[in-house]
Length: 208
Length: 104
Image 1 (cartoon, one colour):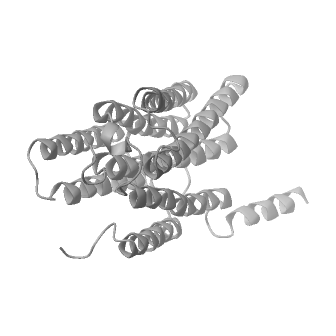
Image 2: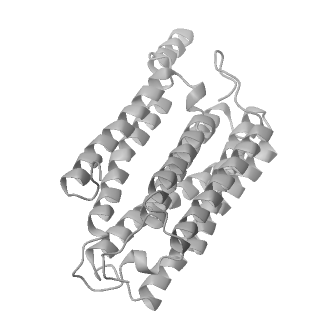
């Protein structure tokens, strides 16, 4: 009876040959392209529109600083995949270490974003309503930062579970994989934002 | 996880580190291109080069760190479908509003 119930449970999860939670995560991430695509497009539409109060985002970017925080986020993908690899080798201590390192690198990125926003608002005077490009910029990077914050919270939750239970079980192992997928996705979205919004930025002609 | 039967072997930690070094180098080239273009106008060549480098980084992270190249093709199809749909949808929008243009 129990074996049959277990078999049913197994079938429910593996009818596609792929764990449904994993499939769900990939579909969710796929849908996120549309979400971030809309925000990036919104920014591109407004970044070059003249006739509004200055400064425009492209005038005040601090590329060396943003490059550093981008680098931190990029390297967090390495520590994330090392945590995944360590769990596959059943090395619980290394898994915890790499999870914590990933959360820390994510926090460095978030700290950098808070610093950047503070500088833009208080020093450069680019507030949320200064011009449509500024609104689009804060909306885009703010939502990305929110995704990073959620990722950091999920990483710390996994770390806490691992500390409390002494190890991550096989079920938690799948959770780690799903959190890892989410984390890498946040990283690839930043790869696009860093290039399109920062490095290819342009202010309206005659401004800046 | 890497231990599931039928799955391919994932890269080793050393290979992951090598991939990270490659990603770091690509990022350095991106930032360098930005400054080269600031110092000497690259006549519009900076944009395609920067986009190419970003796409390369994107593919490396998705393929190796997210393990998509080792996963079932069903997952690849779902993920790629969303990406292509978004690219087409927003490219049409940017073309419509004249943010990007076909040809010169």
